[in-house]
Image (cartoon, rainbow, N blue to C red):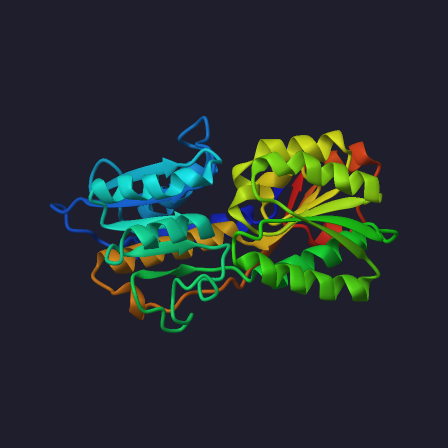
Length: 332
């Protein structure tokens, strides 16, 4: 069971949308637009899954309806990040008007495949560090969209984990240094760890084959919990990661709530519903003629805490009442 404390807020906004039809942007009836979505993860089993349906549903609120004036081309890498460049080319061959790229690796793959098709990135990267944009305020080029404050989120998450486990002194940190956003997060975590009295055991992941070795290294070092930085490789290999967390019986901190729903302990993240809505707004603007290089990149203003209370019980961890009170989502 999932208790989502944002439900009432969504209901309020949904009611407003229904009461104010003008909020649904009118689209020319004779124009059908084609939007591509590139994701590093595996496709969900159901097209109504939140990951599959989120952006199309947000576009519907803006007047774009699949089968009427919208065609959505979704491509999923299935956890194999090396497939992303080929999938990006597939979307270009499908003659999409705009591509939504989820995560750093997907954004880089699309931007390398085309310098002209508008790209809307969906969170989880530092586009300036990746060289995708000139600045957040004036991106230039063909990339815009939403980004997250990965280093700051990781620090907040580590503080949350320490608050949950006051005796925590050794933490395994998995990171993917092939992605330029990794370094800033590690620096931020190391600085925060000193003030929290935590020793970090950082393990570099180059491929999924390194996951098991990293956990074994952590076991030998006597780590008490595991944290991953915010790179696509961890989301793309969700089942492998959660399986190792369970087999090693380690409390875990992730950047995405769907990893907590899969069995992780907790996450601290930007509100994905808000990011999805903002991403759809970028797509809408681009379809109406805006230039991506002129649209400032947006940073998150709303954050979420997800806690899997069932996982906590299985690990013998008592979640402090103060954290339960602040949690946006409780997963049983």
